[in-house]
Length: 402
Image: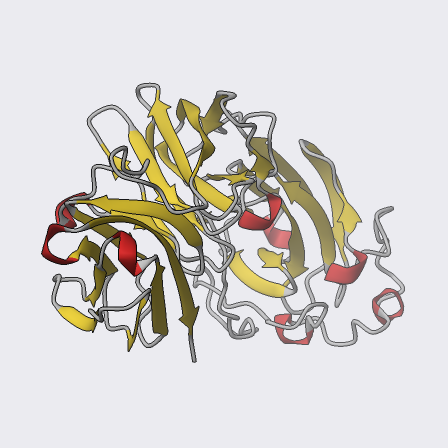
């Protein structure tokens, strides 16, 4: 018995047509055009039932092309007849991560029959030997329809049995928030309401925090062993940061520019908890003493992660305020600090990923603004009082990309 195992097929390269003159036991290629079986020794399939009126076909007709494939619930146990120039096609639903097996048996002296697997009109696998049995085994990467072709070689007229089964024992049972595998289908987070979720290996769970510009989105995910989890936070434009992992948790803490999406992905099946809020907000300049809710961010290593295209209020109280922004290579960033100079002179730097200034604002007037084209890596902004001055400010950023 020869068989082909297909794992997690997502993009399949069309194969060449089956050679009708191949020797027994050699592997076959597959015709790439749905419904075109001329190259598998079945010329005349435009009207297959009239090609050989002496062959008593089976009750499954007409199923002579992938478009006419019989819908076949699983498990299936079928009997059929292959007439000259008359393939049979069966459509089965493969559930995500289920392993499917198709077993074909036929009398050897009646003519050789092959098994061909199609997906989206393309041949993606075959079993072609001369022993009277064929087998295909594959794993569905997502829930989808698969077409099984039972195709006789040149002039074959034979009976066959076909059994198709699905083994879903290893399938991870997901949580009841599915389908939330994309940013577009993300479920809404309720502030300070914990989520108990389940992650499946390779699966993604997306959540939307309906935050306002200037609010801190703060969430912690705690996987339950043996689950392993990574997380990231992005804005509507897909810009953002990976979460900061620890030995037992992974956390995001980012100043939002509006709604923020959290993406969780699992390395192994398991449960997790997600807790946090986006209710800590600062929209106006703060005062000293008291500082702002984004402390401690006095060094570049402590820089507060911040989304572009947002506005928030803060204060520099005889210290440095560092902010880290997502990579946006080739885009022009403009950063403006708005403040009253009489309350204390504030200066500002826009720096590259190494902390080297690429634009500075250090006038002696109200407000400071800097602008520069960004390079690779994250960008940083340092806001500080001149000669140790303290003052509140509002920081606004815009990003213009080619």
